[in-house]
Length: 464
Image (cartoon, rainbow, N blue to C red; front, side):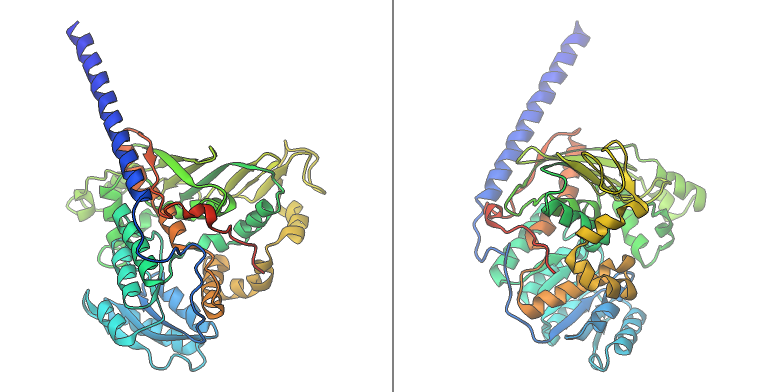
């Protein structure tokens, strides 16, 4: 009887705790929806045209160095300054910019040596835009300061690591009327653009469900111990338990579904993580017992699975795994009432079959069978920029196309392809998943970063 009573007590306690947690979540959601704005809604915001886009870059390591070289090659840009902790990285990027820039980047100012140099750069060079490719924890403070100093901010993924930081970014963007875009490059992949066009054309009918992932074995980064991605990212794997990198898979499917753009919105999320095994085993196998990686208590599960429910009741499964030995995938799956589009490998199935390829939805059309589909539904922007982007490189060209579009929109005074609210919504999966995992899979309510204006925001158009 004592054991039975104890079980009843624990059950009642758990239910009470869950009820209180849900009530707290609801209160936070209501507070966010009623949170006053001191500025302009940025969903469809178009900034004044820039004849020349004057650019400063913070961080020119693995990602930033590629951005610097590609931005320097785009007509109408001027690289005015670069900041990094390490002088040799700056020197490398300065020389690369001069080489490809046709004489436009001969006076690049260098800022290096300590953590405060980037602030000095913003104040002394007054750039139009700032590109930020640094440690995740620096993304939000650097973006906020850049906007406060009068520059548009373009931030590597994720846009921030906590919900309060995301709100600060949004408040600052609205108050300063400066763009803050998270640079989700995967939205510019050929397959992703094709699928976006197919969804917009209604080829797969009404969209019901999506699956997204970032499954990419990156244990080798642990070799970067003093500087480089692994030197700081490994600490995140050790200390945090959730989906730490959701946006590469989520960004494209969110745009297929018009989430946060007039049609539908994120509602709630539940999340579960597998046991944490792989990183500790890898450290034990590859490093001495007294190595700093073997001193870490890796808390983050090797694989995280989260499920999002939208306002319309549609679902998205998101997975993340940077540890397990398996092939790379982003899933990139979108299911509609008339068919399905999927990735890795690229394959589609339509009710009644894919013309010229299959005779029913029970078989995939893939490989050369998709040539006719590409011919008919290739995204117009890829038709225009695909060959140049592949030549310029960066994840098969998606990086260059993204940067080209940023510059193009700024020069023409057009809204960006990704707004500040999308960057925050996609990145919010991380802290919400951490909370859900810690609460045993309890649902987490997404903040409405748009304060209700998502219903008036235009869907992303199929730009030519």
